[in-house]
Length: 88
Image (tube, rainbow, N blue to C red):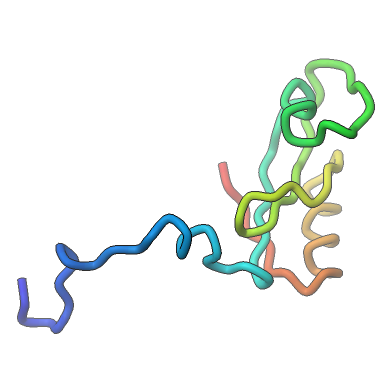
């Protein structure tokens, strides 16, 4: 299809460019289980299994913080002048 001036068949984004998309501007909040904490936050103390937590990540996936409330994660993003988005 060429009538609209875009051809999605030829559009490509490198993995490197995708990794930097939103860098310094966007962070995402993801609900995780306490069992996932050691893989994301190796320095965190042991947390009992079965606890619902929220992780804030930079746009490239780097973990920023861990908390027990979504609101705290969003507030931390705002304090760092980042737009928080949720992922499921």
